[in-house]
Image (tube, rainbow, N blue to C red):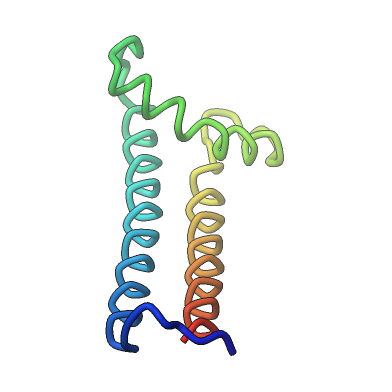
Length: 106
C-alpha cells in the first residue's frame, strides 16, 4: 500500500468522498441532459438556441453511437434507453475504480 503523508486518514477520507460525489454528480447531470434531449425530441423547437445547441452537442456522441447500433424502428428511438444503461454502468465502474484507488492510497 502507498502511504498518504499529507495529513490524517480522516482528511483523505473526506477528499475521496468529495471526488466520488463530484463524479457522481457529473454523471447525474449527463443523464438529465439525455432526459432533456428526449423531451425536446417530442417538441418542435428551433435548435439554434445556445442551451439547446449545448444539449444536442453533448448528448449526440452517445446517442448517435447507440442509434447506429440499433436497427431502425420507425418513429421510435430506443437509443436513450441504452444510453441510460451505458452511462449508469460507466458511472459504477468509475466510482468503483476511484474507491479502489483511494483505498490503496492511505
